[in-house]
Length: 209
Image 1 (cartoon, rainbow, N blue to C red):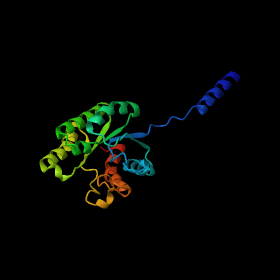
Image 2 (image 1 turned 180 degrees about the horizontal axis):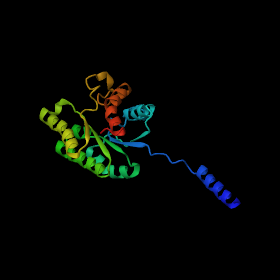
Image 3 (image 1 turned 135 degrees about the vertical axis):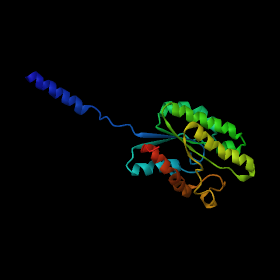
């Protein structure tokens, strides 16, 4: 009888001292360029950090990993992606790449292929994908611009990914939201960018996509 009580007490002690098992938080991996890397700003003021903060304030257990690099292209993102997926094991991959491909005049067909391959690698692992589209200045010619925009939509359609056609849509026509270089959004623009994509991100977290 005494031995039985001792065994029960020991089991109870083990249970009490064992770490509480908690559900894994939802992880969002952002693979982007300077737009998502908060170029010229503190990272905490960028749209990625603001999105994490906003979602946590809503009571959602979510963590963002910002793997964005200023100047990166879709080819660079494709090279980096497998290691990033192995390391962070995200539930959602956000691809915000392509702007530098366009500014450098790279073929939109190559950009589209890279986006599709990135999305395919993630989706083969059961990871959801959101592609955030971009626009470039009109001096590249209408034909190139049309192909550039279409590449994002086609990549999303072919890979079964969600698409936000233009991440900077809320600020694009107001130059006061850009830094002195005229390319990178300033701190005041970041909440607007964040709000523009937040609903789509929440759909994935809530299982609605």
